[in-house]
Amino acid sequence: MSTSTADLQHGQGHSDDPHHQHHFADMEQQFDTSKIGMWLFLATEVLLFGGLFVGFGLMQARYPQEFIEAHEHLQRPLGALNTVVLLISSFTMVMGVNAAQRGDKKKLVMFLTLTIICACIFLGVKYFEYSHKFEEHLLPPRWYHAQATDTVRDAQGNVSHGYGTFFAFYFMMTGLHGIHILVGIFLLAWIAVRANRGEFSHAYYTPVDLVGLYWHLVDLIWIYLFPLYYLIK
Amino acid sequence: MSTQTHSDKHEHGGPAVYTKTLLALLFLTIVTVGASYVDFGSGNVVIALFIATIKASLVALFFMHLRWDKPVNAVIALAGFLFLGIFLMFDFIDFGARDNLRPVNFNGMPVIQGASGASGAPAPAAGTEKKE
Image (cartoon, rainbow over all chains, first blue to last red; front, side, top):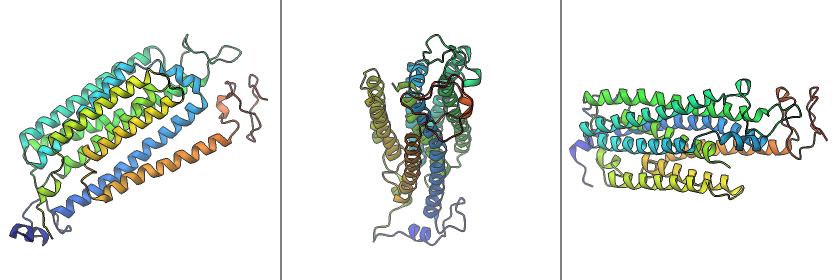
């Protein structure tokens, strides 16, 4: 029953915090409301990528042999490297949120910068992977060039559409994920600039927390993309 | 009736917990890459997705704070995956019940092994198509 004067004011909506908007009872409710909104958005993101995962699964069931042969063209070490980079970036992000919760501006800016660096490394590795595939014409069906290793062919020697279909899904899903990384870099930079201006404190760090959630979801999607594309036999 | 202060309510986990989570995630990455070099037949997909789900749960519980959050956020997150599961299930039921899934523009490509061509869909003139 130890309720301080500050907490009573908090509960009655007399918070002095300039970020407190009048239609919320207190900062606590305002924070929770923002967070629910972010989770609803993340649920729609799960469904957005989910549709593509279902399509990938169906086409893999449709062209099992082609998908196994096509996935051999992906560079497993690069995929594993990118997985490690994204996991580390999730760690630096959550450390940034932790710094924000404690009102440690210096560490917050540092961890946000580290997260941005990891994101850039990820996109750099993706650039090398994509250019390799462009050179080899490992592309969606219309532009796909038959590889010597492709075994599923018709009587005339034309290769199955399954190979190109694999790369259509590969570029669609890793591309959409890459766009999310790119958006994440801008969001992180925006948060870092605001943090540097001293806009966040232990009482108000909602944007840091929500961008953090977004960033972890991008990591979470890659956790499924990596084994499905690089490791499936 | 304990009234916590704002910072008390949100400051969970901490660097030690996050470091352990990261180490667990990196360890599981090594395990899943290692497992992909061993042939378990159709078990490879199951193992890969099982490990991915453990990793995703670690990220959601610790990095995304669901472990300490108000339950409503976890309910929303799980609802997303629940509906994805329903979507996935019905699509594969449909796939399994079809004899021939080939769209018209895939005309001429090899058919699925063991698929009987008794599909009711209007099949285009297909010269190289093998139908039983």
